[in-house]
Image (cartoon, rainbow, N blue to C red; front, side, top):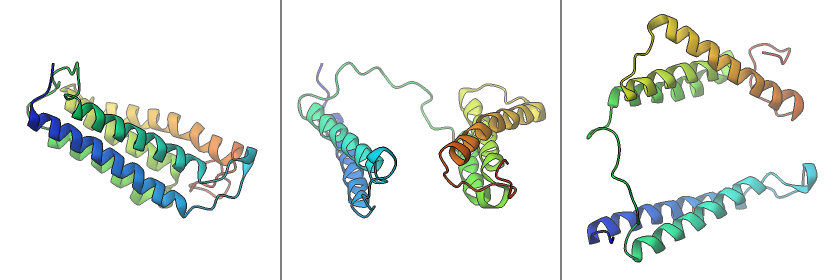
Length: 170
């Protein structure tokens, strides 16, 4: 089944956008020093891997669009319009995390981000958000996810993340 010409053009634009993002990441990776670190891998290794993957995916998407469009696509799920209130909750979580990470530390800011994002995602699915009890439960779940990640990065990998105290444990 072949896509219509406007759909193929839109699909090619998505591939071109993916390709462009990959090229932009590669341009940024050029500026990162390549001095080998732990296990012979430098800090520019991961950006190059991501850039290469995005460039390959972008080229693959463009090739499929030119050859008749993306095949075997299911119709899109979800509502006819986006849920702007749900998006606002998720965006608020990201903004709160960015604004507060240096003030209240990694663990608490990530827990707040998780709590707000989960509320928005539940709202988008039409599920009940759970009221105050749900917010507290989501916050505690966020702490239970963020704290081990914080300790893994700061204690095991020696990567500095902003903490709430100077002890390095919170």
